[in-house]
Length: 344
Image 1 (tube, rainbow, N blue to C red):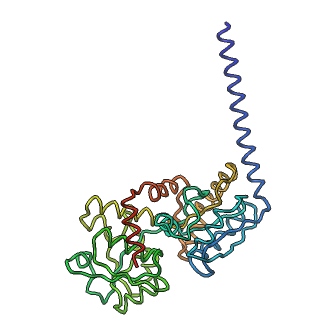
Image 2 (tube, helix red, strand yellow):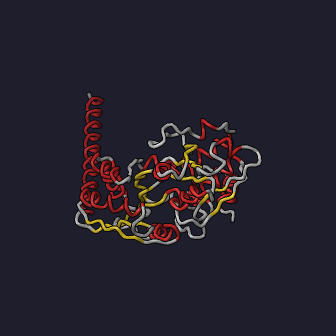
Image 3 (cartoon, rainbow, N blue to C red):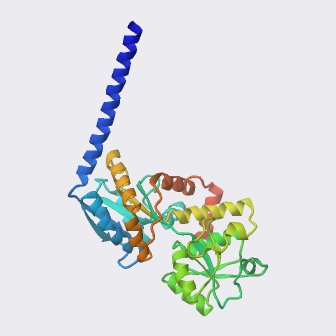
């Protein structure tokens, strides 16, 4: 009798505790929702107006504002390829009123190679997930004598790639490709962007370009480029028949690792972050709100109309990719990467 009474009492206590925990979680969620109501949120972009990151931010800001019941203002803070703004977010107090859209590929690579402008750690920011990312494409020039993977791999080939700065997606993508395949490459930097490199391809000034599939689609349509390989195991929506480097080239385990590493780096795409150490309830509410917005079919369709494609990855998947890129690399791999990317 006493045993049954004790068991019933234990069940009652457990029920009360569970109820209190659920009530506490609901109360915390309501507090977080109330916190954002009527607030002004700064949506930071580390580049000037008119570019792709700016366009994504301005497209998404009204939707975030509606979902948060807040005012969301896009602020451009260009400098050091977006790193100045990211440093500012990382060092801020984390009051919950700042978010930033970040070039995750460039920010992650800059952190890895020890760029002097880096004052952040992407594994410690408040991670809100990836807005979009694209498979990257290796394209060749129509006037080049190198128009197939075999042409680039043949003995004596000396392909010339076009790029901008050392870490801009174009140059570092080419550098890692040449490192992995042991190609005798020359990377000509100084172009203002991929569009300028595509024109150089068309003129025969360079042989190759490493570029996102969304941009490659424009250059191929214009007749300025020939797609030869997809640099990811994922198929491109624009080039479904272009083979992957993993299928078209017989890779050693080491080469496969480099291309998997680079594909993961590319998949970091456009990350949304907030300052470190946000209160748990605020962070969870922000993550849930952003997840809801980026899964909305109307928002996805709106983006597609202007080539602002949304391919959401949740914070857990994003954190896993960041760990793969930033912490799983060996010292020897990191040195080889730094030497290749930062080579003058």
